[in-house]
Length: 375
Image (cartoon, rainbow, N blue to C red; front, side):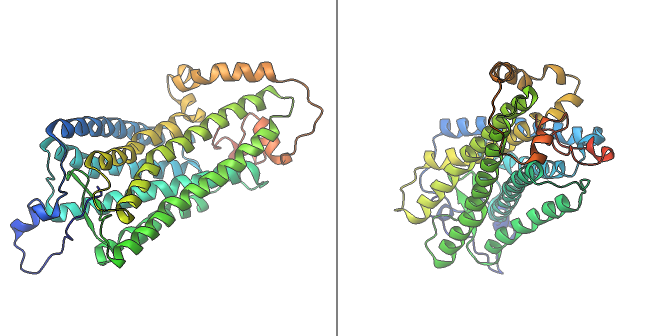
């Protein structure tokens, strides 16, 4: 992932055979994983491929089968699922096969294509997660009696793809480049290039495609948790229960986001600004696997933990993630005692959280059944 590689420049006299052959030795990382190392990597990638594909497939089936899930906010969840599914189909499959053989199988053009589509789909997912955090925060805290519409979510979905293309097309045009990474069985941005173009691109990519989404998620979920804690002062058992549920979901989402993407960003910065060879082959593979694992984790966090989706499935009443909350709910009920201190949260938020439908309690009845449930 983070070794010095030769730029994959193509001249007009390249034969067809050159375009489909594996990158030459100068293009590949010097340090290699052992055969056992490649086997271990292929096992992890195989698990990510299987779970990521089927988890996102379940999500797509649920959206197709149940009309009540096709709500404005859930369009962002569907967008995340689609981008993660595309990563599994067009990215993880090729790196999985290459890890089995211990070498890159896609050739030079395949390497550029792999780096581009994985970066594009990955950034779409990251931006969608950041937008989703803002939507959750604004939906629960902003007093708005308008019925939910699809205009804003669809604009956000289109914007996430456009934003991703803005940052993934430049390497195809000469601002940095895509090349082999890690153990030579996958491709990404050429992190170790010391040219001005590459360094400037990597800095911008780190700021606008990793740091900014993290800050947006941190601010929105932080404000959401603060507001939910204020509502917890109300003498209502239901509000307490939803407080614990939202707290669990928010912490899980943020921790998994940071766990999957922060190591990748940190190691990339080390490879870009550190001494040559500072990142070993093993150290470069682990962050890449963690980043790819987000395709399997996102459906679990953002869809299968959705109470609305659980209630629509045949096994919703005994869903394992709901069982995990039973003890927390009981503790919340026991701890719900009188408190003379008035809550500081907005009145509209308190009404939404304490109502059977916590998102659009103030919306017209005809639109309320399509709301997204958190508790």
